[in-house]
Image (tube, rainbow, N blue to C red; front, top):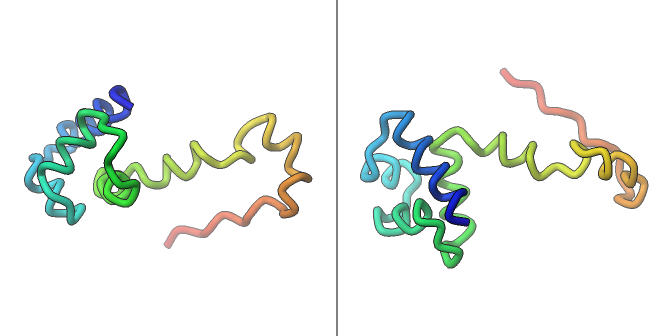
Length: 91
């Protein structure tokens, strides 16, 4: 979790966002943002995802956790009882 938090911090800095502005946009406290950036595993998932959205990382997280984006997932897709969801078209 430490490395994930550090990556979030690096994205925030590269995007030129202060801790205060990023926290405000994510609707979390600066203290919560600092806990995320330290890799605190006790932070609520909703807070983490709100910050990821502010940092434009939410789509990358969705793709990273999609089992059908892996060889194993594609090989065992039949166990999911569904077909691959259609990608949403972007406006």
